[in-house]
Length: 243
Image (tube, rainbow, N blue to C red):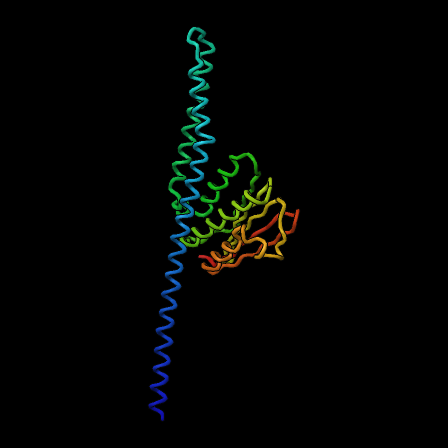
């Protein structure tokens, strides 16, 4: 009986071990697929931002430069000098904007240089619209060793939250806080918009991508809390173990 029991135990143990290996491999494949998907989404968001900025900002600056140069009357030297100086100023501004876009073209490479810097770049484009007052605080000293995959997913979560605010919240103020304490990284985003009934989540907010935010946080071992009431804005906080 004893040898039969031992053989049965070994069989069950090996079977469980194989299942564990398969489950672990499947989890890794799922994680890798999510990272790839996130990279593509960040790149897509980047291209949308670049397209909008080329049309709305740099295109306008270059058009003004062209109009200014075409209106120069060489017979009136003082006025011509003023317009030439104005055209030079517009050109310098266009070059600065193009340099910023050049950095943005790196897409998810922004995250490699640091999550906080990537968040700062994202805020820059939101503020340029002139519709939002954005505050950003970064508390706690980040660890010397970062986690690029977690940084990328957290950055994408931030983009999704900000897109929700722009599309749905009708807000004028956005507060972003990044905090690192006791091996936990916390990202908190709040707004002063119209809010929603978070007690009905997720049924009534499925169109806002909140479930996707929770799913992504869960993939990197994190949690999400959502606090909102009608006419009282919203606060979304993401906690992830880090690094």
